[in-house]
Length: 433
Image 1 (cartoon, rainbow, N blue to C red):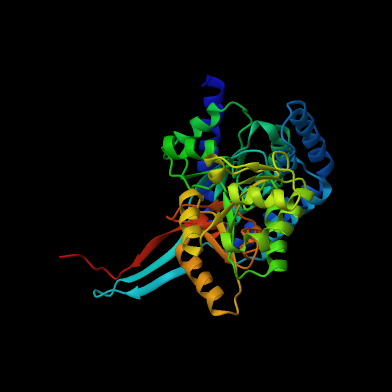
Image 2: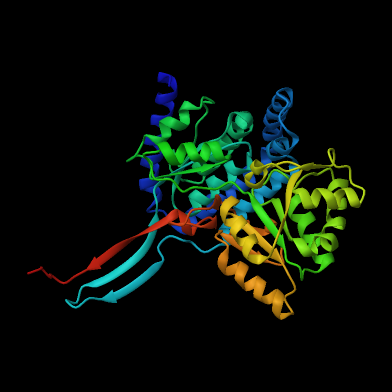
């Protein structure tokens, strides 16, 4: 780590720490006014942001970055408007700070109140999606926190432009200097420097690939909220409706390839594969999806005229646990719901899993209930696409990530997950014997 990197990160942490102490006493109205000004500033400065993003996209394509990642990196006028709208959506949400969670009188007449308060300083480390910059800043400010934003090198110009716009707007709205701080260094050591600043930074949130997340979990001295990778499954029970199965699988896989809630693996009851799979496989192949299939599915693909070896290839053991983030999917036959649950709990990433089954018949309903209870994941669906695992879709507003851990936050997490609580104790002179 160079001295310049360490200097930048430590200074940013001190500035955010000082700002967080001022933020804790600011009213909800003050923070909401700042969010509205930040949204307006994004719209007004869209040309500058798009110009910075163009630099990033051109550099990424020159490095032959996969198109699925380019899609995550790319900003358009519509996407900037979405970022601005997400900030304004936060304004309409209840303030998560200052909520009385519990209130009672103790045996000695002490009045005890448990109240929600901000975490303090939230550092977010993320990769190719510049919209995360606005989402994270907005969620942190709405919940009374200061934030340190460290985006990936792929989106360096975009992130710097967005941070500058948002920080300027927040300051003009009267929020303290340092409430939004961006780390401009593209060296990976900047993340390592953040992870050491326990006492200045209250929580670190890594949002990106498995390597980044694991590195933070293993090496951070700062408490980590783990956002997980998404090896998401859809299981087709033998009672599944063909049309419903087709629509759910194609939506979950093809809506956007580079998102963590995309379906990466399809399981199907072996005795229903010949009925359920052909139409689904044809549609996936038509949309350019490469299928990694087990032996039974390969044989079925050949029977229905798909090109085995080109459009459909034999799966390896590694395919069952892979998050493709690309137009690829694995397909495996299972003996029934019990094997499907066991497979998912072994190879899944505890993100989002779905079953498609007949919810009007006893057999299908039994399979659904077993699946919902037995699968260990943050979100478990019956007869719906995994694409809905999203803070906005869950009515939580803009999210800061999808947590796949079990402590503090799980699933899409936003405002409430960026608060903790403290006890307020009011007495009349009581002393303890």
